[in-house]
Structure formats: C-alpha cells, structure tokens
Image (cartoon, rainbow, N blue to C red; front, side):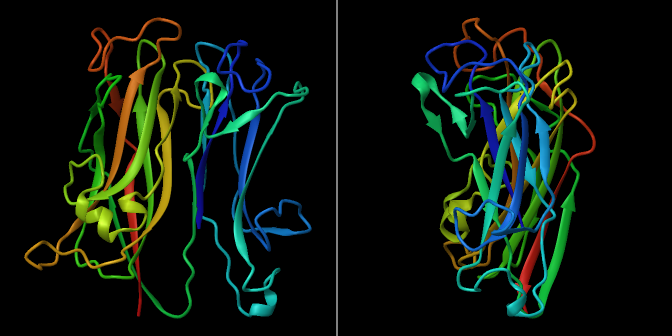
Length: 313
C-alpha cells in the first residue's frame, strides 16, 4: 500500500488568495496510513497504523519557500492470518490517510491546505491518492526497473515543457494485472528556485507525456498511476534543497487486455513525466514557451522507475 498528498501553506502576506490568516513560521507536516472501521476514524483507539509516517517541515522563508509540500507514504502493509484478527468487521475495514500540521508558534485561524491554494481563496483538490493491493492466495510477481534517463534536462517553460524522464516497457499484459509503481527523480537547479512537478502515466509510447487513448480505455483511472504533484526546489536550506529528490508511488489495474486495432497484443509504457519552471516571485511572467536567460533543470544520477506486476495464479 502507499499514497501521496500535497499540503500547501497559504501565504506569508495577507492578500486575496489567503485562506485563513497569513503566517511566517514553518509548519511541521505528517502523513500516515491507518486501518480503520469508517472514513472519519482518526484516533488511536479506532485505528491501527499499517505503514511508516512521512514527515517534513515546509519552509516559509523566501527565497527558499516551499509553499507546496508533497508527502509520500510507501512500503506499508500488513498480513491477516485470520479474519478475527482484524480490528474492524471485514465488510467495514478501510484504509485512511491521516494528515496533520503543527507548530509551537501557531495561533487561531492559521491553516494549511490539502491540495493547492488558488486565487480568491479557492482550493484545488486532486493532489492526493491512496492505493493498496489485497492478496488472497498465490500471486505471480514480476519486477522491472530502469535507471536510464530519457531526458537529461527539463526546459525552463511556463507553458508545456513536459518531458519523460524514465520509461519502462510492459509486454504481455492481461486483464486483472495490477501494477505497483515506485519512482525517484533527482533535479538540480541554478540561479533561482524552480517549481518541479512529476506524474506517472501509462501510454503506448516511451516519449508520451499523457496517457494514450488505448491506455485510457484499458488502464484504471484513465491511464494515470499517480496525481501530478510538485514543489519549489530551492538553492538554500528547505525541505527540498537542490539537488531535490522527488518520490512517487502509485497503483494501476489493467482492466482490459491492451490490443491494437488489428487485434494484436500491444505493449504499454509506464512513464515518469516531469516539468520545471523558475519562480519569479512578484515579477511578471513571460508568455508561454521557454523564457530567455533561465537555465534548464538538470536531471541527476540516483533516480529510477520500478514497476512490480502482480498476477493471480
């Protein structure tokens, strides 16, 4: 099991996009996955933790402000030897992702946002996903991994600019196969902070930055393995200091066997897609395209994409 969620601070100045009161302290964030009997269960008496806790401190000081702080929980799991051992009725058990924010300097009406804050005090969701694989009986497992970089840089682009950093070809997929995906990316910036975002998708080409029509039809969640989450990669000390490390975890199910129009079995590709652009603070942004004078984001060593395919025997 695993999941990810983006927590955003609101603002350091009281402007129209603020949600709650502005603040300048650095909130300490946590995310964890628990087994619970209902969707509202949060207390320790009603839940059992089933994975590690993800922690980070979201820096608020410019120019090293993080603003968006993705938390990734992975490597969770548990074994049930007998149904009576479950802490909840088997028909009511569920996984909850719990998130909290804390600071000794916090006062009333100071909040973080689950998702992304937008203009005029709106909140954009769709920045979190939780998944798990339930095994019952024998399962055939195949692991595939790549550390080959398909892109060594990301262009400094305010519009577009997406590149596939890692890609893995999957052949012989069948209906019912489950894909568990983990990925890492190392990004280095220079000159100023950059926003770096990542998503894992499934497509029919190793260079595709969005799911293909076939992938949308045959893969769960319209061919997306994770949400698109990102952060400010800073030059100075913060939760994401250059070289910055992105972590991704997600799951997908093959709902129909992928075949071409002629009926032949077709391979699919799992792609880690990334983009980056410089943070200009209050300065006007140039029009869409690669702005002049800004170096690209460099992809460093140490990243990878790993796909574990599970199939019931």
